[in-house]
Image 1 (cartoon, helix red, strand yellow):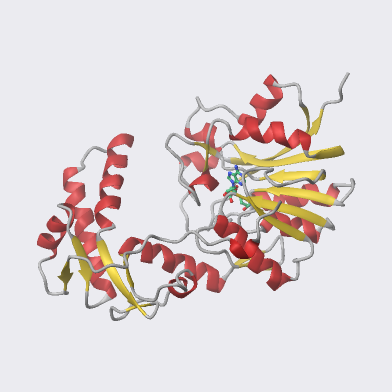
Image 2 (tube, rainbow, N blue to C red; image 1 turned 90 degrees about the vertical axis):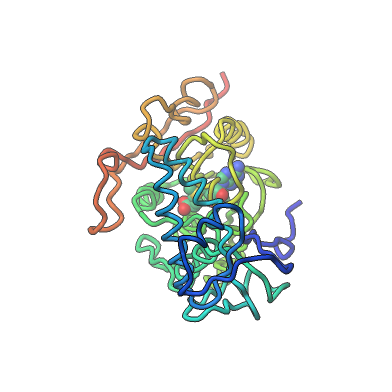
Length: 361
Ligand SMILES: C[S@@+](CC[C@H](N)C(=O)[O-])C[C@H]1O[C@@H](n2cnc3c(N)ncnc32)[C@H](O)[C@@H]1O
């Protein structure tokens, strides 16, 4: 049975609701000494201007870089971990769901994500994350392929490059099979499901492990009038799904995880070893006769490390479940003209794979 969407509570940054012992930071104070205390484990509360928090973080960065000179992958990882840990001890106070420091940005998430509590402390980096997310949510992201603007919810993956959407659009325009039922695994901000609808698909079962994605697409469905076309579900892969689909689409994470995955955005970028084998096993059970699996992928993992395997090629090679029907590729363009291409991007390609089940002999 599908879980009631109303009952899903969004993931949100941790907050402190009790009184805390913290050093109050004012702009004329000794930033170096304050940062040393922060590294030693003390909380610091920004009292005056929002920019004073930026000042403390800049000093924290300078301080830690003096100690973390090792430029190797592991060295940089250690530096980032140290920064993350200490920077989360820099706090801001929220009252009536607003930051109380002067000249602070307006972050609507403080109200929307915390309807149950109006006064609390939250870390400065979490506020920065909410600010940036709020700007995308308010302003929206124009997706030309869809001819509409997306408003991604806090903590949800959304596209900033659109090559994979163009590939999917190309395939959808040529698709001549049944458009009765589709399943989208990993709906994210909803883009691919919206493309399916715009190309005539009637019923879509869309699912994600990220609660915020489900809440966000539910809002988008109301705004765009897609409520009766998209059934949303919070769950892992095909959990709660009893549909047999003409098309199953999945734009999975593109990089193998070398760390313990956290809920949320982390699972949009990185995949655990078992994700693809589990996906293919379950997908087979959810395809209608003549159904197709459409996977959007990339050679990014190979570009980053030649040793990485390609999970779709592995599936085709090792299991006798599916045959390749189509494999389209497209160069990835830099996100903007101002963005300097890194060398690896030059060889990066997005891929669209269409697989069909092998007939039993
Ligand atoms: C790369 S994002 C793609 C989002 C969106 N479909 C798009 O194309 O922009 C991958 C999505 O898959 C979701 N995801 C990862 N593992 C999943 C799983 N086991 N079951 C369902 N969704 C999953 C992530 O939370 C994320 O929203």
